[in-house]
Image 1: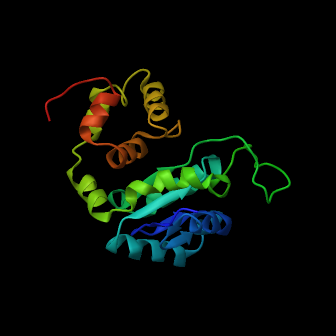
Image 2: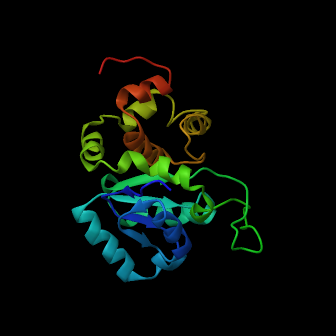
Length: 200
């Protein structure tokens, strides 16, 4: 078994089984939203806000509708520039502990292969590199607009195509996609992904 990754940022997941799965892969602070509990538990929101003042937070929810709703809620109560949005792929299946698959028939964080979770989180084991990338990446909404990813006919389809190319879920809002892109790739890598060259 590989040594667990040391992740310097708190990781927010939905439930205790997600937390248990991550604990087999990473060493660090893992917090839960208690599913939809975060919507009405003010102490959770207060804790997350307090942490966000001191450190970036990694958000890792399921790829189904419920996970997107929880992620959206967290994004509405926490500063966007303090969130590292990570996404598990949408894989059909059923968790071993469950009798029936989820409503959408896809695996959650708890059902992901350890190797996949490790690969997803490995880039965030070096706090200095991550924070430098967050600060230095000049990618903006203007870039998304100029590249046809927002504000035009077919923008949603172009966002979905780029998301799939980079291993992100489809259906992301422009703001969510921008936040993910600023974390996942350099400006040069973004330009390459959308098929353009630009002086930077």
